[in-house]
Amino acid sequence: MELKALCMKCRNAENKPTMQVMKDPKVEEKNNRYSAKGQCSVCGGNMFKFMSKADAEALK
Image 1 (cartoon, one colour):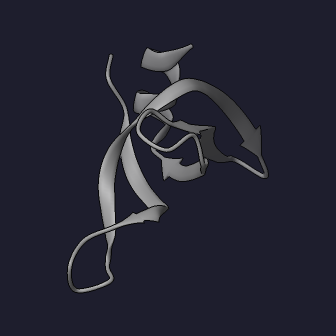
Image 2 (cartoon, helix red, strand yellow; image 1 turned 120 degrees about the horizontal axis):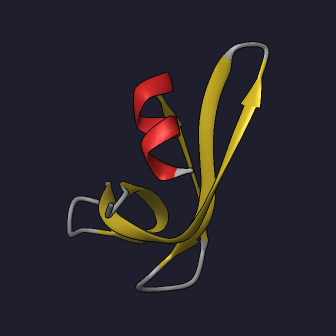
């Protein structure tokens, strides 16, 4: 499964963050909220994304 998230380093012409593919996503659960942390496949910057329980189970 390919996970896309906003990268704060990769920006378009209007200076808005762009959607990029996340490398090596690590799923975490804290207080019944699921999230994924990884790196941008383009620039290598840190990425973070909240996700549903179903999506988190699919990535594990």
